[in-house]
View (cartoon, rainbow, N blue to C red):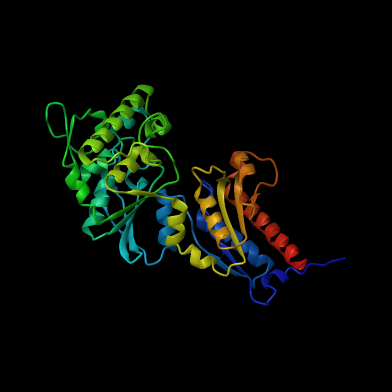
Length: 402
């Protein structure tokens, strides 16, 4: 009978201490990234405290992204900032700064000013919500000397096509009577007739790199655009969505005329109600959220010489055109020849098509249970520890056979 020593796994064939890297996303509405990491770490140490465990945070963006970067980013500074939210109300909306690729970088989450959590979505909020506050954050970052600006997208309640942020930066919008339209309004609801000062505002960003962190492939307008994809979720009626989509398309026609720039078919610009499109007018480029987050928390460096990578999220799925941040960090580990494991609350049926054969995926659920029960913090932590323990035992068995 073969007996497997649980301490065997702590050392490799050369007698060197084993290294495990943990970088989990939050289990939404259940556990934070740090809480998931800690549950996995404790489970590993319970089997063998000699294992070298290295942790890092990861996030799919939005406000969680700022929290993760504050905790795990290198030389991150938080900049206090007061502005207005999507309904024009005063709000504290800090952003982050650091150096990235030898240049000052500002990191701003769209949800800090335009977050859906600040409203109860309705037709009334739909026609009022504006991205003006986000524009003031960008303007402040420019004033502080930022040469790169990273926009973490997601979880916003605005559908103004990003016109509010352009207005905050100096683009002027006029109504049919030639009157300048004031701030803190959803410009798509005003039926503006003229846009001025667009080119001069764009020129302010000639030497600034704007990165739009998103994993969506939705364009700015049209049948797959921002309004038709997320408009109802943000409170819009069918008629409002139709009107706003038409006006967004009209704005992009203005961009073509004024700047000779056609962005209509660019994937991803529909993110956050079209904020991505407005940023693209300024020269912004789409970047995968997982890739930029991994770089900012130093994940590639931490994976060097690692023997195992463990990540996690509430639900994992496989959509090649719009990969989740977890899929992106799993691919990173694979490229670095590090065995990778994902633990999650739910494994989507699409994962049966997941092509990466060097990745193993485990659900933490041990028995049928209600969603409410599954999302209880203590219950989820226990389940994470149990599945982690089984993963480590499986590693022990594999190494014992070598």
